[in-house]
Picture 1 (tube, rainbow, N blue to C red):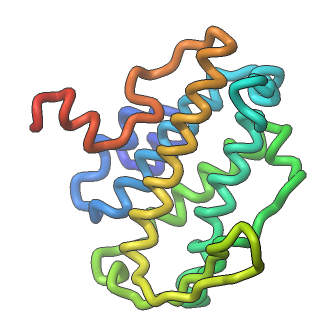
Picture 2 (cartoon, one colour):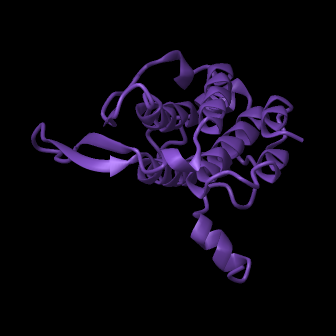
Length: 191
């Protein structure tokens, strides 16, 4: 099965199986997209919008919007080499409508499919605020490959927060949802 077919058929396991020749940095993003899609297809709209107070201040939908915003920051490539992680779509409909999140994750997956090994060393300038007390942005040099690794890791950490909401709502999900890849490797015995 082709990766594109796996996504449109909503088969997360088949997505990963179709990735034999894909760079590791891209696989990380695709794996995150597969996890997001699997979760979104199991949630009701009410569950997607539930805020699990006092444990969390944001709904699953708000976390999804934030994760997608960080991914969207690098999708300006190849038309731009500037990444601004501070561009946010707060109160965007994706926070409330999981169908929009599903569409965005599928679109992101298709963007990831366009990236080749040769693209990973493409230089980028990355901007992000670094202070809570003052408006101070740091601009650093990076590569597309490094930023792909970062956004996937960032997503996993938010998935861990989403898992708290899932537990508070008594919703079961994959045992590895919100688990860092290195932790999963440890539990598999290091393979």
